[in-house]
Length: 145
Length: 84
Image (cartoon, rainbow over all chains, first blue to last red; front, side):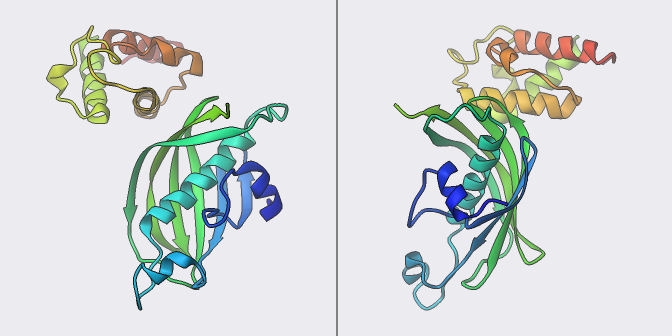
């Protein structure tokens, strides 16, 4: 639905911090499903952990937050095209299973409350059909000065 | 409606990590209780979820004290046509 070129028009993050590869489903204002492919080539695996690569939980939160930004952006007026900066405000996330190189992370984010400058969402991450993390994220958006 | 006020007090206490006893009816969220805008949004979302109501965005700035918050909740509970 959203390929990587379109994702990069919405998300300000770039290498090595772009944590969404594709959007597979989007209901503006309601729900988004996005994919992050986890590859051994990613640099942080060298240290997390040496000889035992595990995707850091904070990066699962980051992937959830980035999917949330796309969901937030999608329900705005199309004419509003100013550059935005996003600030993470709160997170409450549980990690249920480790994620390894080769896994495909499916992130499902549902809106709890979306305002014009902030949002609260609930997010769940799956590998295949197994839930690996879930929680709630709050963030605000400000126009870049 | 003291019950509604108590329920909302407990709900706010959990979000802002204070004891319910610290949240008097007129304590100012921002000045007295250290509430920030993200917590205010969390309070709004929690009330919507608990009472199954939808509070419009412009009401967010009215959530300044427990008393005001209860008044906003009551307004939308009434317009939903239900007693609490």
